[in-house]
Structure formats: structure tokens, C-alpha cells
Amino acid sequence: MSHARLATPTAASDAPAAAQPLLAAVHQQLGRVPNLFLLVASSPAALEGYLGLNAALGKGELDARTRERIALAVAELNGCDYCLSAHSYLGTHLAKLDAAEQAANREGGSGDAKAAAAVRFAASVVRARGHVTDDEVRAVKAAGYSDAQVIEIVLHVALNTLTNYVNEVAKTEIDFPIVTHRPT
Image 1: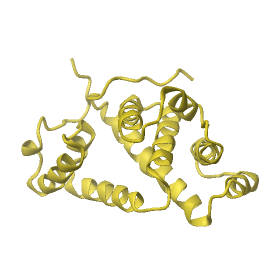
Image 2: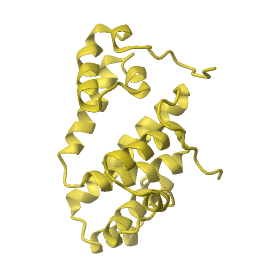
Image 3: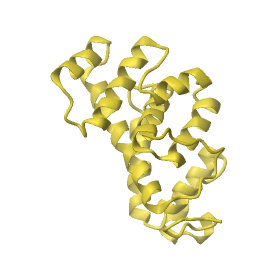
């Protein structure tokens, strides 16, 4: 039984016509269209905006492993089980992050020292709602991140927070192996 609060098309063909080419591209990239994309497709403009920012950041300086690490930390802090489930799956199958690394990411860290600085900073951005300290910015830069990369970390926090909030508002049905956030 679904507890979804907003209607999610059951297939891309049920989405608004303007969203269908975008969903076809998602299908081509992922091999399927996860419920998040079907849900957001109810507003073709929102789907276009989300996919555009996601694609642009994919061309940035942060590697896929760091992006997944950030996504896991943000989803844990925001209590979004849909995104935790999706990024646990993507972290395992695409970014090749092992279970210990994913657990560290969810705690705001990493087994890799440089990645730990990025994840720790991302977690600080979430907790402080952007009002990080000078010391936190100095620390991420001291770990080897450029100003551009710091901006990308912040944008990844924002992109993941966007999907966390959409999924929590909608109560999107999880279509990945389920992972739940830790109680706060």
C-alpha cells in the first residue's frame, strides 16, 4: 500500500507530453525511470531544471564517488529514505563505494581523507543551512578543494536537498532496495 501524497505517473507515457523526451533520456542513461523522475515530470519545467542542474554538475570537478558520498550524507541528515535508498544503490553499483564507506558517508565522513573533508563540509552546510564558519571553509580548502570545488559541494548539497524535500513532501514510493535513515 502506497502512502504517496502526490500522484506519480506509473510510466513515462503517462507523464505530460513535454516531459516525455526528458524521461526517455533518463531511461537511456539509467536503464529505467525511477519514481523520483516520474513524480517531478508532473511539472516538465521542474524536471528540466532538475535534470539541467544535475547534468551541469556532472561536468564539474567533483568525481562521481565524491558526489555520491555527499548525496548519502545529505539524505541521512535530511531523513530522506528515498534518496538514501537510491544513493546507496548508486553508490554500490556505479560509484563502487563499499558498505563501510557508505556508513562513514552517512555519518558525515569518509575513509578517504580528502573526500572526508568534502563530506564533512557538505554536512556542515546542511546542518548550518549554509551559515558555515570561516574555519569550516578554511578546512575544506586546506584539504585541497579549490573555490570552484567548494561552490560545487554547496550546489550538490542544494541539488540533493531539492530531491530530499520533493520526496519527503510527496512520500514517493521507494523503488530501490530500501535503506532507512537513523533516528535523530
